[in-house]
Length: 146
Ligand SMILES: [Zn+2]
Image 1 (cartoon, helix red, strand yellow):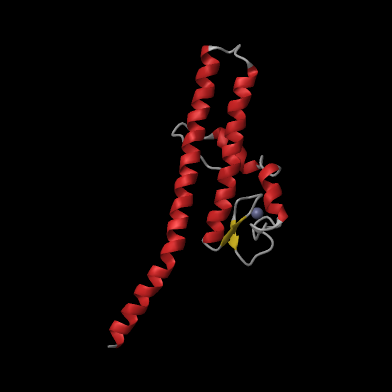
Image 2 (tube, rainbow, N blue to C red):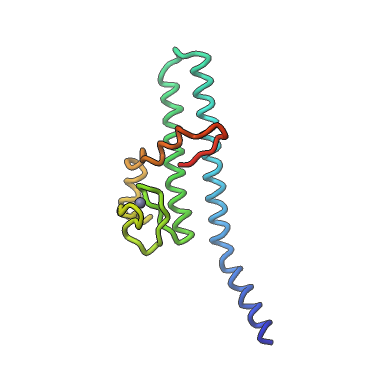
């Protein structure tokens, strides 16, 4: 009897968590999609330049802007993902911190709350971080580490 009681409780616990698990999967899928699109846009940029280096710079700029927008989206989604998992991602060093932390345990930077203003300003300004620059050094396997 005791065992059955425990099993039922365990089952209930699982079904309660399903919502947040699918939310995490959904975010992961969206991040992956944006990362794949970025690789495609980078390839497109390269091909366009190779074929016609004198093309209107506005064309290249539009593609770069598209990449920027997608990278901001990825960064925001990564924050959401970490919030769902109970982590806060440091905007400076990308370290995962406990949700309760106000400052990063690794570099000491202030950790933004998804609701507060710092988070929305991060979307626009705090974009070209040291870590995001690693993207341009992505190795030939196409691995992206933003
Ligand atoms: Zn940090």
